Image (cartoon, rainbow, N blue to C red; front, top):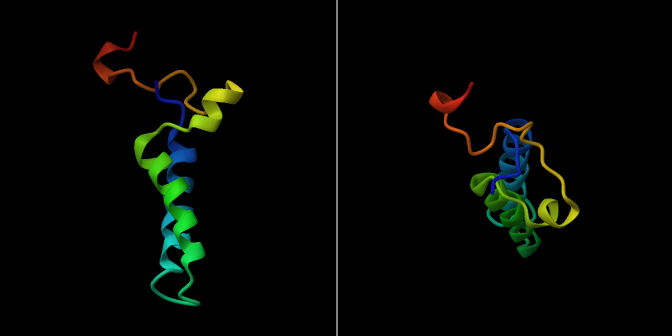
Length: 70
């Protein structure tokens, strides 16, 4: 089940890439690996924390193929 909407997904990917870049540029710290969490949840469109809390930012359209919409 998908629970991450388009805007949420975009923000997660951007923040994830920004944090991950800290491993290679800037302070070159391993704390940048924390960026893998938002990056992976953004790419997968699924957030385990959202599922536990019963949150979805999809607006009811996640997982539906455009040709199947009414």
